[in-house]
Length: 181
Image (cartoon, rainbow, N blue to C red; front, side, top):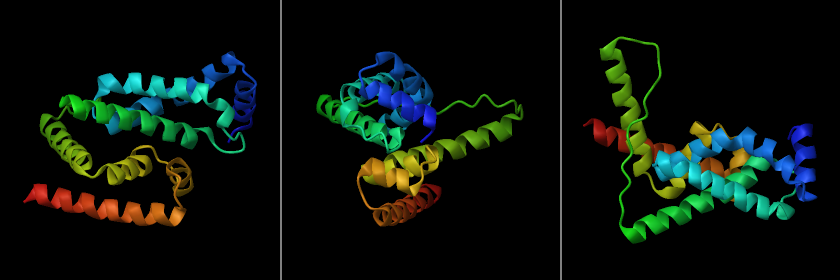
């Protein structure tokens, strides 16, 4: 963890609300992206990440400042997203997501269409995985978290992270192969 971040987090634990702003600013984009991937709904992602930051602030006294902030916060964010998904399931509301649009400067329509198809196929395959597999794929490959960070965020041993990630990748390959036939 950066020294500046550690100092800010110590100030947060002492009750300094102003010190939490830079922490939120540093991780807001990553948090919204994670929430979007977990929820499959960009409109709900911002609300979920903000709710998680509020919960993190309320529970900052439980945070061990010797540990990195994001894995701890990520666990809170995952719980918020899981709660929202459970509520959504109870309401039997299906959230439809649009494919992610790329702001690429490439102008070849065939290239863009093929790339969008591949990206959408991957996205839909990831979203079909079980929640634990989807979560670990997103943490490793979309958030670039290390095995150690994933283990801390999920509260599981690193060996379990590696095993679950291997199984998740295999399931993703099978899902993609099934869609290709």
